[in-house]
Amino acid sequence: MGAGLAGAAAVVVGVTGMAEDSGTPGGFDRAAWIAAGGLPLKSDARAPMAAGLEGRLAGLSRGEVEALLGAPEEVLGDSYVYYLSQVLFGAEHRVLLVDFDAAGMVASARDVSTETWQ
Image 1 (spheres, helix red, strand yellow):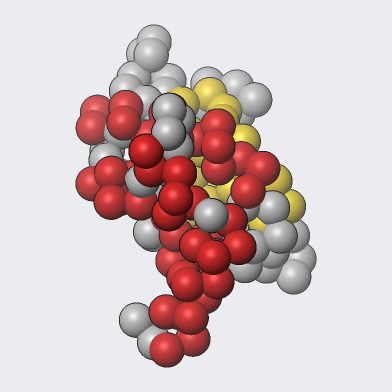
Image 2 (tube, rainbow, N blue to C red):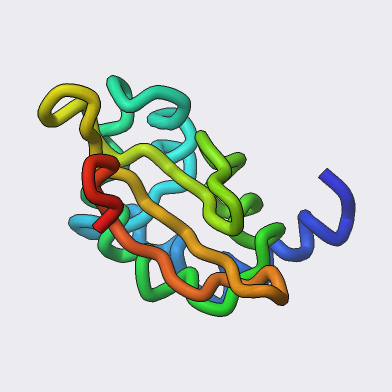
């Protein structure tokens, strides 16, 4: 990780206060978030943390999002996808969809179904 990205991670934690949230219900715990990534089948630990993240990611850069949440499981155009739950019905699962604007800043972040993307 370069000095710029390490600095971005410090800024994200300092500005959002997410490091201090780990002890609260639904609080963000970066280590638990990263450990639960990769596959929908192991991502259930992320669901309680997602609600707290949705509003706090607005305006962050791609680098700041990756410094906080790690690499996305999928990239769909200008959006990052982070798995939040196991398969619900068929191939459907819940994801945190992080949309970026043309400047590469978070425009929105929301919990959506992969069935409807809503």
